[in-house]
Length: 256
Image 1 (tube, rainbow, N blue to C red):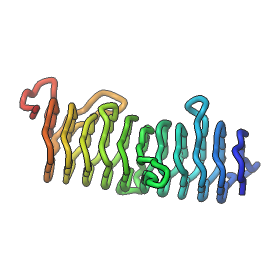
Image 2: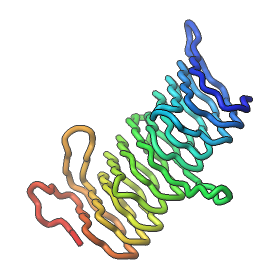
Image 3: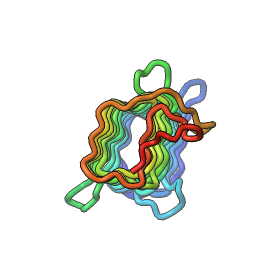
Image 4: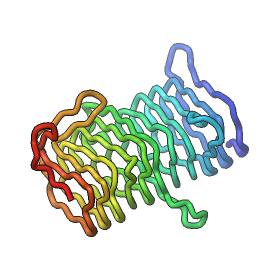
């Protein structure tokens, strides 16, 4: 167990076979650290804060295999890139950076009432999907606000819950979204092939909700799509909600 802040670059390699990082527990903080792992990554538990005082890649984990159960405290800017799958990624907050993998079981941002960490999430999420998984992202549960970032998910998403979303947030799911539940206000852009349930307890402010749309890295695509149950508790202001429409040719958008 490491118990102090440290700033090395660690490389795990094994000639003739893939190296494996079994488990790491850090009771202190991480800053300016890059981990390159040539094989599978096991459990990573960072009990102290990931304190970023330098550039965007102040803490970087790169793995050629799977990442099972990463945990962290109050994360500033951090990048996690694995070629395989991520299990449950859990942190008190994750302010910026990139999380990249084929699939992820869960992204859980808990916050911490004792230390006044609201549980915001501002990192980008890039999931390429794979043919063996029914969902590219099983669930995302954000205690506070999704403050920004770009979520590009090639596949379906289970449940997405958050306290609120910012106008700086952009999300595109090439597959279906089972359920969207926002406890406060919704802003930003969300596109998915379909959405079964939309529940926004607060206002929808300058938001864009599109189903049947794929706003991926390449050219935008607009196909047939449908909303299921939609419940909005507050006002709808300067917002676009559309299903199966092409904004270039169809004027039947709902705006309010």
